[in-house]
Image (cartoon, rainbow, N blue to C red; front, side, top):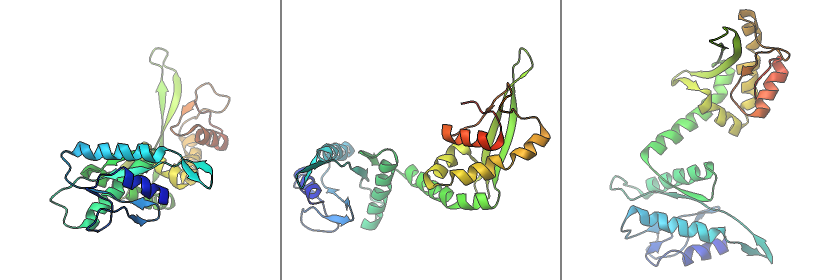
Amino acid sequence: LRQIAVRLRENTRALDCASRASAGHVSARLGGDEFVVLLEEMAAAGDAQIVAERLLTAFSKPYNLCGQRAYSTASIGIVLGDPLYQRAEDVLRDADTAMYEAKRHGKARYVIFDEPMRHRVKRRQELERDLHHAIENSELRLACEPVVDLESGRMHSIEFQLWWQHAMMGRVEATEFIPIAEATGLIQPIQFRGIIAPVPALRRQQPLPTASGSAPARLAGSVQGRRGVAAATGISLRE
């Protein structure tokens, strides 16, 4: 952290105030491994990006820790000055939101905060919070549709469609909530409650492809997840 602070001071101008609330131009740590830099007298919004790129380059160089070379990366959130901001805490909150977006997209990068980001983050947090209830309250829905060859009229495959019927948001597609489930460790209970458990009822409604059948099913998700579902249900799934 000391070496990071040194690089921070070396790569910000004298007019860049790296502090929480200080009249002087000093480097300071907010807490943990988080720092904040206040850039003053910026001629254009792009100037903040130039500083961010300079800092990312500086932080990517190796550190000397007791004679050993160590590497670290930084995630930077940028928020631009706006007359609508009335409190420093609100500026820090939005910079923090942008920083975590940078982390979520692979780290070692910067992200500029905008208003749609606030809504995306809020929606993601709400979905993550409610996903536990979706499993408990059986809000996951599964349907399967045959894919038919128009020339022969024969069933080519079966496509499974999984969605979440959210009590307040309505239909939430699997492409939105499955990544959240994978990140929070809820993917296995979702596979069981949302896919594996409904299969017997679906079998009673229409024939489903078996492991030895010629018409495989399609299911979105990771290869490991599809194989787990195939093993538990006996359904032949296309990779």
